[in-house]
Length: 137
Ligand code: FES
Image (cartoon, rainbow, N blue to C red; front, side, top):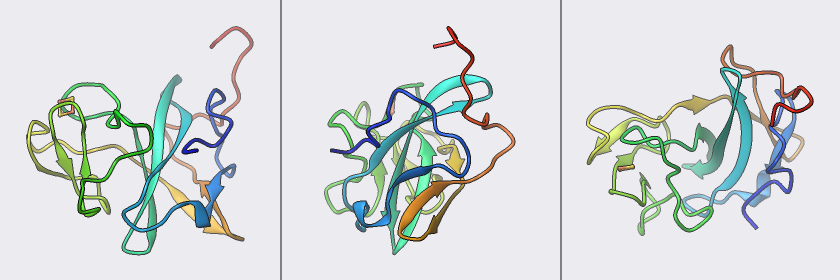
């Protein structure tokens, strides 16, 4: 399973995305949701070079999710993030475009921190606190 199990509810800052152990270097990612600039948005977390990273799950080429196969964000070598739609490639540590249709535009990075064996969503000015008004979804 590559989602938090709470995939329908946007996470608030400080909430757990997943167990740290759920992410291995270059392996499958974990999908979750946030509220970005007031709107629900898909996101994902992966691990690269020992560090967990998270991004909005939105290709810089077109606003589609990167993974056709849920949770599969890395290329075959496990070294670059790749969009399954047209092959845009991104650096897993920074989200910067490495080639393809992203044409120099990168992924939107989300702050994360690891505490007590869990990966937590950090704070960002464009992230809502996760509270969802009734009927807003
Ligand atoms: S939508 Fe991602 S490369 Fe085109």
